[in-house]
Image 1 (cartoon, one colour):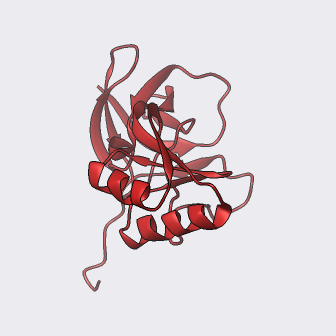
Image 2 (cartoon, rainbow, N blue to C red; image 1 turned 180 degrees about the horizontal axis):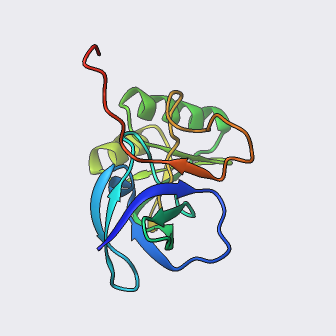
Length: 163
């Protein structure tokens, strides 16, 4: 079984792929099967969200690329930018993971949220598509360090007993 503990930013070649829906791309510990049929274990820092296109390296040097799986989503558009902002506000108030595009929103399918959005006058399209929601104001949207840092060590660290 492959053991994967590192995220890297560049690679000359990609040896295999791991396709996962958003729910599983949020997990720090996960057993997966690659597209080539190899069993692999992800051992990443807690709070890491894998995105489509991310590169990972196994302990034996193989490079794997994450593919954001197609999953059931709603694409939401509105007659005006203000109406779309209103919908985004109501979804955010419910802590709904939300992908924000230029003039559209995308969220996981949920019939209660669909009814609310229709009630707000939104046009909703049901489809299967990759889901890449915003990381949030405090979520890992960026890294610290220089541009020369090609490898981020994702091995778990011991937590302090003091909180």
